[in-house]
Length: 410
Image 1 (cartoon, rainbow, N blue to C red):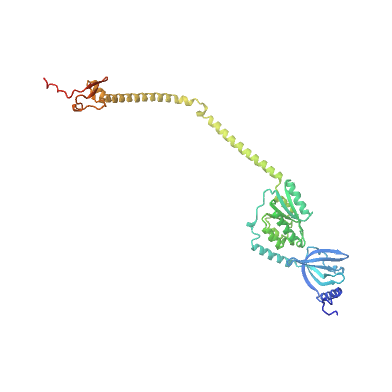
Image 2 (cartoon, helix red, strand yellow; image 1 turned 120 degrees about the horizontal axis):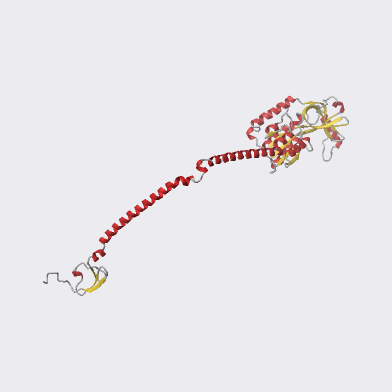
C-alpha cells in the first residue's frame, strides 16, 4: 500500500508523505554552497540563520548544531559572505526543511574582489562613473534627503553637524537597512522616493563605516544603476576610506564620513556671515578709496588759475567783447546804408518807368468806359464816351471824331 500511487480514493497519510520526503532528501547528500549570511541567531548553543544568493535573489535557512559550531570560525556574523558544506534536512514532526551545516568558512576575498572589479570595469565602460555626469551641488539646499539606518550614529552625525552649521536647514529622512540582504533594495527604494520629491535638492546616503563585507550592498549593481538614473544630486557618505564601494564612484560627491558630508553640503552660517562682512568691508574700502581719489582730483582742478577765480573769464574777454560789439555795429550800419542806397536807386528806376511820371509831364491817357486804352483815333468814333486820366485825377469827355491835324486848317 505504501508504494501505491496516491489517488482521490486512496490518499497518502501525511506521515507517509513526510517520510518519503525525508528519505528522498537524505539521499541527496552534502553540497558546497556560497552565499551571504543575512540572519545569524544563537539559541541553546545552536545557530539558526539564513544564506542568500544576491545575484539570484534566493534564500535558504540553515542550522549549525552546537557540536559543529565549535569547529567553524568564531568571527562569523551577519553580513559575511561564506561557503558552507550543507545537507538538506527535513523535520517530519514540524514539517520544516532546513540545511544542516557541517562546515562553514569565509569565502575567498580574492574571488569577491575580482567580481567587484569586473562590475566596476563594466559600469565604467558604460560611462556611469564619468566626470561629466557629475552634477553640481546647490550652494545652500533648502531641503536635504537623507537615507540611513534608523537611530544610527550616521543619522545623528549628519543632522547634528548640518544644523550646527546652518540651523534653518530641513531634512527629509528615509530609513533603510544599511547591511544585510535587504539593504540594497531598501536603499534603492529610498533614493527613488526622495528623487521623486520636488523639494529635495540633494540626497545623502550615509552609513557609519563597517568592514568590507558589510559594505557589499553599496556595491550592488541595482543600487549603482538606480543612483545613476536619478536626477537629484547624490552624495555617498559610507564612511570607509580603505574599501570604496561602487556607490562612491557613481555619486556626484563622495564624502569620507557622514560628518564630512554635512560639512561639504551645508555651508557654515558663521563662515558665510564672516565672508559677507569681509566682502562688505572690501567694497566699502574700495568705494572710499575711489571717492577720495576723485575728491583729490576735483580739488586739484579747482586750484588751477582757470578755476580759482570765476571773474577772469569776463575780465579777459571784456575787451574782445567790446571790440566785437563795435565791429558788429559798424558792419550793421554799413549794410543798412548799402541797402538804403540800393533801395533809392531801385525807386528812381521804378519812378522813371512809371506811367505816373509820364502823366506828371503833361500827358494824359484816354480810356473807354470799360477801361480800354485808346491807341488810335479810330478807337473812338464820334459820340464815344471817354475817360481822360491826368496826373492828379481824371475827366470825362465825348469824342467828336478824328480832329484835323494841327497846321492843316490854317
